Length: 463
Ligand SMILES: *Cc1c(COP(=O)(O)O)cnc(C)c1O
Image (cartoon, rainbow, N blue to C red; front, side, top):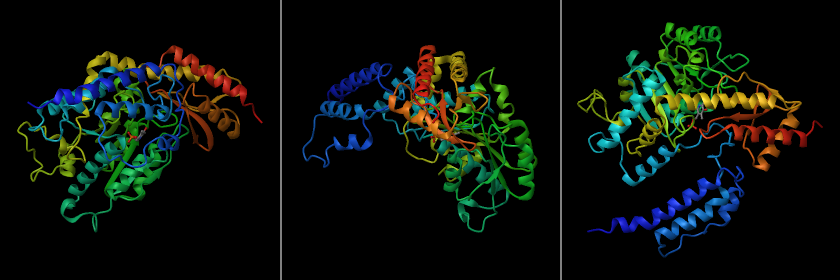
């Protein structure tokens, strides 16, 4: 008999204690880390000791070393970038994923992981109301999900053009042109870089950052031929949604593959109150979103959803026949993502959905949007504050008069640590950007956050 349980028991108990201590400290601790990375680094051993250390002691040492450098992303007053917290069932499921240590690539080898991820995928397609039967790949994030969706589109267009991409590569291939709004996320450019497709053609957007369908039509008519169109559901600064129906019609009239970057905004589709803002999104060919943002599963998890499974599998499968090695037609998990080996990151997604239930997912998404509106309303009451966007989802962009003052208020807020909101610039102005992405943000957090911004604004008057 091996002594497996004993080898793990003490270390896991210590991890459990440190995790609960950490979570208990989150509501009252400073949101910002006390130490920067260089300070944490200076407390770490510079060379790896020769001798072994007891596993439980390693856990204690790690927790003590990390604590000063942890950002309280789990806090209801963390609004930085677009990040999101973690639902309890999802966090616990993630621990089990590590304990089970399934390499989730093969259906036959890790049947529980495959079946649970397939169940989560089917629930997701229903919730988001995307074409049933689409392939869902569980990726590291939306960057890789965008990569996967666009890779499927590239594959499809090359197949249509009669070009054997796997055999011949891109050299000498038909040119694919990609069109995307000027306010696309940089992750889209990164994905295009991975794909060797070159820079996209930037298409003009309106004052909320939404692509202009007429401008898209003009741009596409100027450069006809195989094309990818990348739309956005959820602008980083405004939360705005590209006009899906019109833009998709423009693109499909010209035989383009339409991909939607909906890293956080695609989740608006679950809500009957919000879905109208992205009406027609289901007409696209592929979608990228994150589970680690709006759905509040732990890092990391993105979702690549493709309505034409054969295009995705031709791009990523290593089966000699892409026509499905498994008997069910579901394909192996590794047919749908860039990796072969990976953790079963779809299991925390299943747990999050199971914890909330359908109505709970809708309520959570609605609550994030309601909190964003409440923050915007509260902040608008502070003298000199301008809310620059229409608050249609979870994002609020705020200015405090001059760029200089906005910058100073942002720096002060970050130094105080009561809230965390990112500085950014949008449409030529410095802004303070708020993203409400944490399931646990409540009315008390909203009130405390408005008070913190009011205090910082008063302390940093216009010069
Ligand atoms: C966050 C985000 C991405 C990148 O997602 P990762 O999960 O960080 O890879 C892409 N697009 C949009 C709109 C985003 O908000």
